[in-house]
Length: 271
Image 1 (cartoon, rainbow, N blue to C red):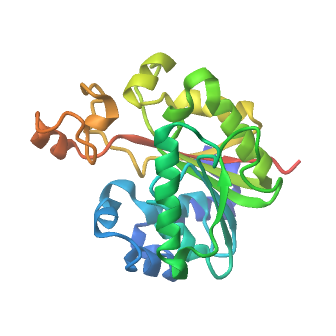
Image 2: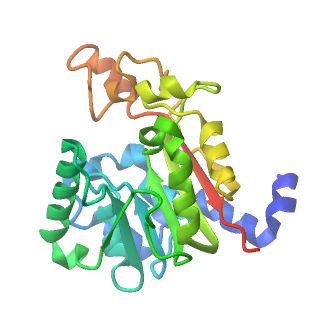
């Protein structure tokens, strides 16, 4: 604790302690968004594993921020971020590029666009950008916060994570924050194994972010799951909600729950 006080200072330490309070202490606007009907019942049911209030609080989300969500997928977090930021802030969603030719990115992007179009009251101000380094994910130096959730393992081919973190660094203002949640591998797990299992070594993520210029500011265990043994036959996708092994040992995987995850907050230096 003494080391933490010296490193953060009293005011920062107080803020860090407040961020560890339960979701009931989330700001009123976020609490309302989390309970609002734009969130599907299936997505809301996963809050017990994804802890969105605590996670976004740890990252320092405020309603007047400019935020970039890297690789939003089907929009689980977009359902929260878009309405929360709609009036006072700005949200960029860096999805697959429009010129993608493979079936999966084309279908994923089309589904995301359809989701936004179907609910203009919540999503009309989302700015769709592209995750295709070296293309920018947002105007340089414009973002207060860049976030990405359970995506780093998708970028490990050819050390692609380095280019993504560089894009995040470029988009952020000096002093801005990069927040990362990722399936956590056992220490020392090689990249090749992570490509197959989806579990990524925490040190690999830290090394890639620091190589891009970030400073690791804090870790949180809010998305940790000590029940996850990380040795499943179909990797992280064996667990809910995917159940890639079908009905085989399904009760066992239900009891484990979703994956053990690292939650890391990096900062772009001001100087």
